[in-house]
Image 1 (cartoon, rainbow, N blue to C red):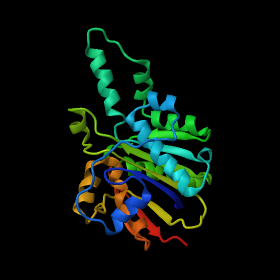
Image 2 (image 1 turned 180 degrees about the vertical axis):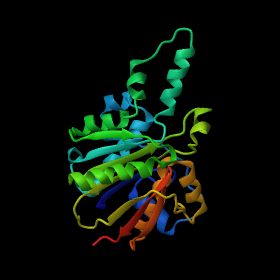
Image 3 (image 1 turned 45 degrees about the horizontal axis):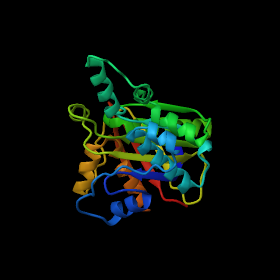
Length: 262
């Protein structure tokens, strides 16, 4: 499949947008700054109060993609991918269920479903395009990218991929293997766009070695945050010359060739 990357959103430790992330990928080194929660100004005050940190994280990078691509949010079909969903909400519900009173907030319940961030985004953006959500553990970025690219190429529609994860309370965080908060969003177009690099994506049934980051801090982030498995791909885009990237995907792998923007 061949699609074009028309916009990137990013939020993670020391990365609060594509410009800063690009600079870090191309010439930065050293320790990454601590993660801080995004403002998610795109969410109205009422929705922001009802939302979770995962929702605000996803909304932030989604808004960045729309601004970068110059496209209305309502144009995008969306694919949301999170390795395990909102661990803080899961923890709160589990604790409520074992308590004597068993009191459970309705807001907690509606925030517990895996497609909650995608649902919030469709509401605030007024988007009526198709939306789905998936989970594939550490391979969630690769699985989400494959799903988004298939929709984009076969249905000839722009698709936004949202990938997000946050550490949760102990012991869920340790069990899930999430060491840092991270989110990324990619705006995919089925046709060439000005300044957009092309992505040729192929699924390989064989397991091949993943592309890793040379920078130790970035490699630690890649391994510690499922969404950060996108960093090798973003690094190939950031350099401007393109390149080949391999992403692990369960028993198989995803081979991606990045061609420079025309």
